[in-house]
Image (tube, rainbow, N blue to C red; front, side):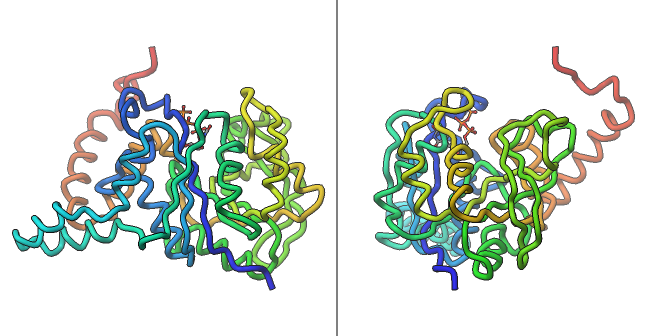
Length: 303
Ligand code: UTP
């Protein structure tokens, strides 16, 4: 029986350069989709999967993240006095139980692999989940809950994957597909951003991982990979020589909110799922589609 996954690592120390100046004074993970910051969607996904402890690997400007999951006494008191019960509930839902959120600093943005390594002492010797909060998963049940169910059958290391346009494999980490095992499949290879001709499939690693603690020793070698960064994929490839890696096909839709287009798409998609604002949003979309949808030449193109 696979050991239970109790802890999640949330790397939130990236510079978020694609969103400057929005990310000048706050982390990318505080960008909002409708009315919640990206990081809150990731925490809710964790809670639905039975995660109990959260390790945030932060960089500059971490205070907004810490404050978001803290109690907000003055605000809550004001909401009580004004009788705003719904708003109070929404505010309180954004807190994490005392002692269950741990913050550590990456100090230098040396890459995702380095960020995960920074959590080694806080995770210890047990399997753990990694979630990239800028990858927003829409769909029920959440991606991590689906993965945890599959992981309990097979153990090992598990990566959630999703299909991408075969012409765009060079934007993702891509896996090779082996035999089916339970609800998952054996991963035969992992390649970071392969050209379509070199890609073993069109299944990309979508930002949710369940890893065994042996990954930390490999990350600790601090080998530089693509972009001169310490890459998580490189350590996973090394670990795959010793332990099984399984791919889990996520049944849902991932929005890459680390890109501007992805964040806007996620906002539109989630807004259309919300009865309070969907009619207004849909109205404006119809107006815009009348203008741009029929006249391809009117859609602004990059200069
Ligand atoms: P990205 O590759 O999206 O990089 O990181 P970034 O720096 O956040 O954003 P851009 O490309 O400059 O716009 C993927 C995830 O890994 C974390 C990020 O916070 C994000 O969750 N990360 C990345 C770190 O925690 N540390 C790093 O050194 C790099």
